[in-house]
Length: 236
Image 1 (cartoon, rainbow, N blue to C red):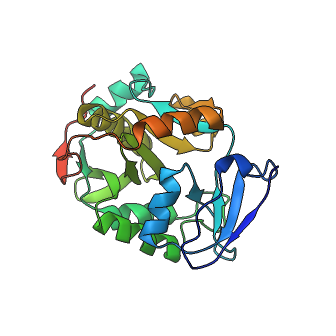
Image 2 (spheres, rainbow, N blue to C red; image 1 turned 30 degrees about the vertical axis):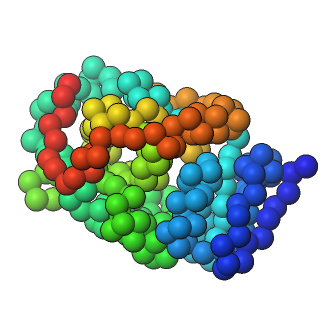
């Protein structure tokens, strides 16, 4: 039976994702807090927070789930040619706070953002603790795009991306895939499908299939040097 759970600020266990509502799709629980241990437990169990500034904390596990199988992120020939012409630099974990701020800027036709101050504070703490990471795209010293997310075993849980120049977020995604493949990751969790993710090669899979993949990969090791800050070359 589908049901909605209410969490308090004690560390309640999350309910099974299979109990999430179908309308709205994937809403599982309300309340709790954004402490690092609760957030890590959520992602470990296929759950993530997503709420607007005036809402209580909402926890989700939608069905279907959007994922990228590493090696299947689609970078078109025209995009590859475009990237080769750009004097962009790409870095890892050089400007996590700035990437989050870029992702938090409202998109066109949007009046607000779900990446609230509370969310930014929580994920900055996860970054400080070595769990959340960013990819940055630079033109000179100007940050023009990037993305951020969490590493859970061999799964990268993507949270958001942004661009200030055309295709800069796609360059970040291409760099992320390249880096994750080298470091031993297997999957990117993209959470909820949208046309942009679909154009990049995301697949919509059943929640049960995603949970089975997560269970296999979340305790697996990757290269221990995976998230040492560095500059990377985009290999096209």
